[in-house]
Length: 333
Image (cartoon, rainbow, N blue to C red; front, side, top):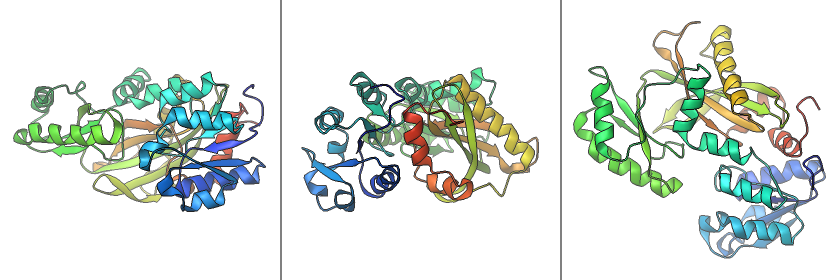
């Protein structure tokens, strides 16, 4: 089928709230839905609400990560598209590529875009090529000596943070204040990242105290057009997890907002971004003003849990936008 064809039937490769959210918009668009579930999710609400449901072999999260089984179910039941929701397979470039190879629409960015932003070190290099500032960082840490050398290179009194190369959400993250903490922090952070993302690779970055965390909602089509739907301020966090989000940010002015927005769009354009996504920045909050420094942190090439904040402010249905973009619809259309 061509990418301009409408979706005939949608397999929702997720569970719970997000599966129901996607089903709601698909139903409004007249698209039948198929849900999946392992035996231990048989009584989950999404199984009852979607138009059809198929039981997966296996149990727990591993069943939702079985890409070969999910693609086979899509083919067997006549699904022309798969929406991964968030988590699970939503940022899996190999899954997106396998869908494309089988003529199934993956409702998300291209496999090439997912690879670009799935590796934070690669994403940082892209930002630098666009002349967008990034914080000083180490190479990928293969041994704690790399982290020690980076820590020693920082100004006296500085703090560093360890981050997972292949994921976010605070998994694997460790703030390091003292040289003696490094070896243990690397070991624990790497183990946590391995369990969460299947890769224990970490890198170290200068820790910016008093930072604001500002993320921009980007929307882009397959024809080279990039727009935005404003920002969300997620500076209120606990243990590196977002707690409350505001849109628009009450902490930054229009001049600073436009500076960061221009940076986000430039990175998206350089990456040939072709779907919705969130581009995240840290802003130095020590002396806020029009000229405040800001730094690209990462991009999340998927629907965010907090997408409804942007929907409330903008009036846009981001899931409807996703389904249309995946079929090749232009933003203008």
